[in-house]
Length: 262
Image 1: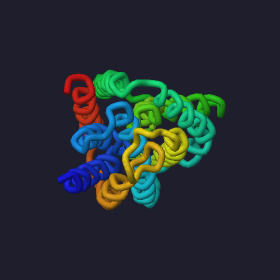
Image 2 (image 1 turned 135 degrees about the vertical axis):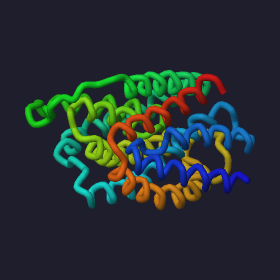
Image 3 (image 1 turned 120 degrees about the vertical axis):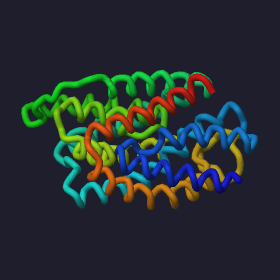
Image 4 (image 1 turned 180 degrees about the vertical axis):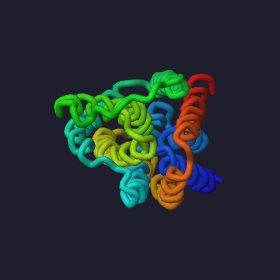
C-alpha cells in the first residue's frame, strides 16, 4: 500500500512539476508526511525527512522537466546563471533553518506561505513589459538566495517562489514555467546534499535512510515523477497562460489547507 502511494504521488508530482514548474514538492511533502506517519517513523524527524526526501526526488524530476522545456526553448539560461550563486547559498541556509524547527511549526509555516502565494497568483494582474535586460546583475543574486532559502526550507520546489518572481518580470508563462523548472535542480541538489549531511548522526532515523533522505521513497517516487514530468512539460505548451496560473493557485491552496488544517 505504501509503495502504491509513493507511485501515485510521484506520478502526480511529476505531472505538476512539468506542467507548472513547481518541482512537485507541493504534492510530495504532504504525502510523505502522511506515509511516514503510517510507517511509524519518529515524530521528531518525520517532517524533516519528508522535506529532505522531497528535495531528493525533485533533483530527478527537475532534470526531466528541464530537458523537455529546453527542447522548446522555454528556459532562460541567462537569468538562471545570474541566480545560481544566490540559489546555492540560499539552499544551504534553508536546510540549516529547517533542522532548527519542529515538524509542527514547519507544517504551519508552509501552509501559510502556500496560501499567500496562491492568493497572489489569482489576483488580477496587468501585463507589464519585460525588464530583465535592464535589471542589474546584482538583483538576481539576492532573488536567488531568497528563492533557494524558502524552497529548501519547505522542500516544495523552487517554482513556488520563482514562478511569481519570473511572472512579475513580464516573461511569458511558458518561459516562466521552463525557467522555474530549471531553477529547481540546483535548489534540490544543494538541499539534498545538505540534508544528508545534517542527518548523518541522527539516531531517530529509520533504516534505509541517508541522512534525512529516505531512499526507498526517493527511488519509487522518482521512477513515476520523471516520466510524468515530461508529459506535463509538453502539456504546458498547449494550455493558455491564464489556465496555468489558475491550476498553479489551486495546487497551492490544496497544500496550504493540508498543512494548516489537516
